[in-house]
Length: 120
Image (tube, rainbow, N blue to C red; front, side, top):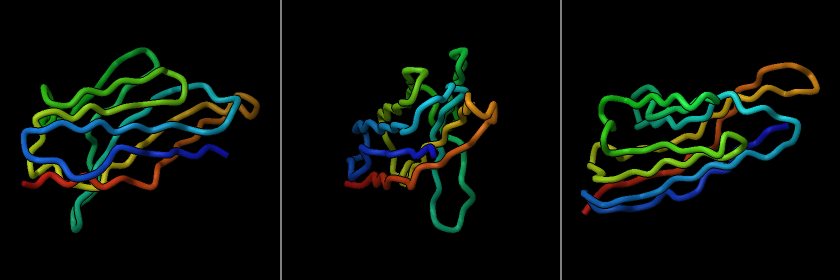
């Protein structure tokens, strides 16, 4: 069973920086893609950034040039958040897509979420 554990959320002042980390547990997995999504109450979960096994990245327009996603292309993904704004306040969810090698089956997993609050 694959599980994701997120860390790094918290309170940060506008203009500041924060780094989110996510690590997957489990073995016999082939990395396909990992990413970060966020959700605020009353709104749909939205993509923040993703990274695929061939190194392609995708960012929401609202975070381009401020956030950076990185991965070890195995079981970890980080999100470096710079020049944060109050509108970045949300619960951030880690997402991962793996191939379970023994079953040759793709799985998609979500983390529990970590709250990021941008406020002075």
